[in-house]
Length: 464
Image 1 (tube, rainbow, N blue to C red):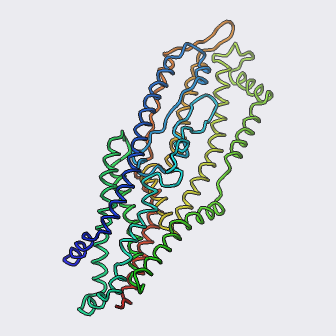
Image 2 (image 1 turned 45 degrees about the vertical axis):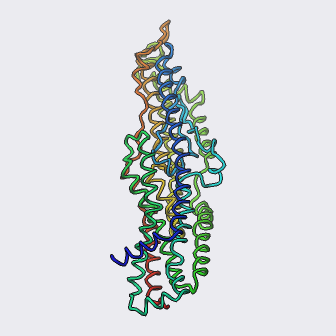
């Protein structure tokens, strides 16, 4: 412990740590402040529009229930409070879906459409800064840990006085880890915690998610700290250690994610969205022919033992619309189920690519912990679709129970509209998100274990 404290005091006295810490805090603070302001603005907009949509639905005039089903309304996906740290796929997938009869609409309201130049450059979020800049900070902290002492001759002096190489390495690593927590973990915890807590976050397990998310970022920073110190053990000069570490950063953080994306797209291709929509349209066309409609109408009459629609105890049009919807639901389930499954399979394949880059592992790990991954979006899309189906079934049921014809005309009013509850979406539970994050977390742990093994070998071969 005394060795660790001595090393830590030395690190804290260095101007280098103050510069690195100051730059990191400034970058993280700027990115976080921008994301927090945008999140508050969007939350206010979503709240106002949601309330207006509810009023619009309840305030519609008396009309046929099917017309009300077409009247529709908009529903919103609640954003995770940790989206201010890692927005994940949220800017690209949309947060707003129009609910209306027959249609499985796409989500809109994509934040990327209003992205600023910094975001378009790939440094708009706290997660972007952690993934690209924090490794550089860790490298700058660790590259000279042993190589500088070797150049000055003080490493020979330390080893000559009986200092155990392993103990020396462990002490310096512990001191630099503490410094990393000070300049990375502490700002993320304080600034991120205060900002996230100011946002409404029911059902999100905010503090548990934030703790796990920060732990993942620190584990990622530790990978580069151990890498830099290992290279410092082997390099003859500090300059050589820094050059090797920067080369590793380029390969791991810049080149590998791009190559991995190409490989995943080739090895685990996702279904085409255009072809998925075409398959759905084809299935609908085959079901909606005049001959098929007549056959289904005759089947309904035969089921009730009558020959004329007016003799039915239910409304034929409402019953057939309900049965058509059941067919459409099955088509949507099969087509979009396969489409989303293929995308989720691709996401998991990308998680395996974390074996080749800790940045990939962190990307795949960070978004599930923040609640902004693609699985969260798919969960919302199906929740909105089930809400739409519940409204359609309620409107069709009202039609079925109120037969029309022979001068009878059914007009529903606010009593029916009020039976539709407001849309309330519950996010994917933390336990399920943790299961999604298990693979990339394992990849990150393997990186730490591999570099730890390399550091152990380098320590055993340490020479002055």
